[in-house]
Length: 330
Picture 1 (cartoon, rainbow, N blue to C red):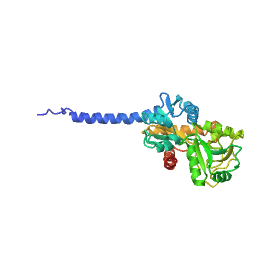
Picture 2: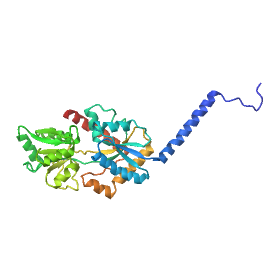
Picture 3: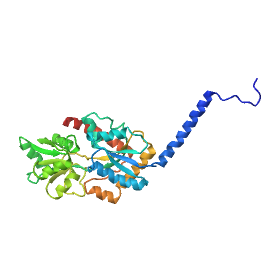
Picture 4: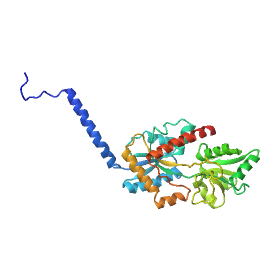
């Protein structure tokens, strides 16, 4: 017989339920707190290419601003190899706590995975945070080439049985794919000469070793200013302020030739939404400062203003657009 006022002991089942509830409550309280306290230690930004390139340069420019904004060090870690896939894979498999980020790009997410099987999925393996922007591709010729504009260049290429050769930063680069898309649209007889980098292609063009090149405007800019290369058109949607005399491919009749060698900020999948929102806002604020706008504008780069969802949709659209072109170009 149970004595009055004495409760039955708590069963093991009830203890388990209470423990689960306590754990759930602690997790609910811990998640906002973790996001609120972030960053509590240095943040690594992996640049999956060698130092000195656009990924490295843009990553460091943004890292400097984020360091000031969050009062915590944001450190660029160069991890080149396999066309950017080594560094990208490293980030994709990192913890989603906001302390390991990636300089993502058209090469690592839109082109590379289409050319060969990547150890990650460009969409599901990442949290896409913010778009930096990037330089357009410009078609340039050596000053000795007769063509003064894009129409004359197409006519010249069609008139030569052996075609006209063009240098690109390498097979599968944005310069190569824009050139192949232009060749398909125009019918110009173009012969691809891949280089191991954008700068090498421009050096050979300036020296008269190749007649033309499809290259990033940022790399071609010094040669254009010194008149060692004649620009014909670039792939920005509208003319750029620093080179107002260079027409766009759109103006020249190629309405789908709008492309940039873009870069952005991404992280591992499942990053807390609060951290993503903080990073997106900080990147957009940094890119909007007069100092950075002037710095990037000098190389033909126009900062973008997309939220995290906008950047995610942008990457998805770029994957869908360039994967077929990459496969066709082999």
